[in-house]
Length: 143
Image (spheres, one colour):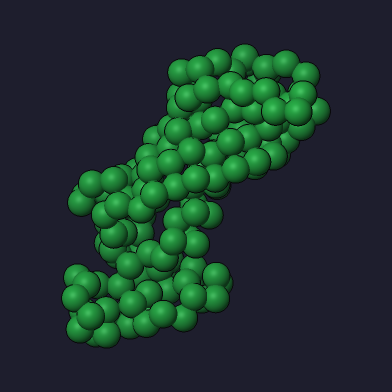
């Protein structure tokens, strides 16, 4: 996935959907990688004891996945300028996150063209994450 084809980006340009299986390994390893040692992200019994159905994805991982979704599409020239997300339904193991997105607006900031991409990551329980990622495309005068 890349915008390196040189096609113009306009409001409404849709990103290709991305489905990510949420496995226990993803949840645990990503929590450890982000230095989040809260037991609800790696100990099923304690997560259930605290009222959860199972272990669940942490917010740092979700943020990284949202960023990856947009930058994988935009290509290596993408510079992330802002990410604003809101969590919804938990992401439990043995489900999938289905990411969709579209360019919502173009803005000019200090002479730099930026693209605001609206993103939704949904699972079987509903929207896990909604928000925006604002990118600039380095080295590209016009897209």
